[in-house]
Image 1 (tube, rainbow, N blue to C red):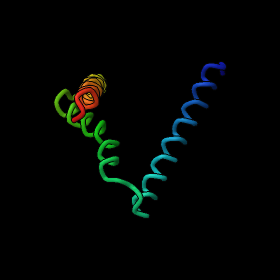
Image 2: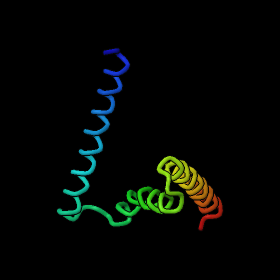
Image 3: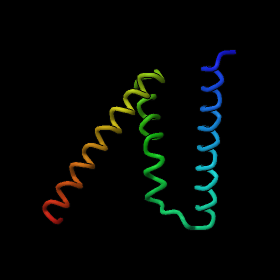
Image 4: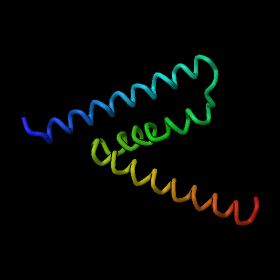
Length: 90
């Protein structure tokens, strides 16, 4: 077994552990009542966009690329809107 496969396996495992910890923390926060529903919606937005893109394209790779492009465009618009808001004191 090569070192690259071992390294990628370890990185994937650590990524899975991190995602699992985030999910457990989020669920615990919702049960306790510390979570803001706006933050939960923002976290779920990419999954919703991906589901819609998958229904439209019927290909997981194209849906992933479409999701990435949509989220990058949304990020750019949000940065632009924030810049306008702070510049013109809205």
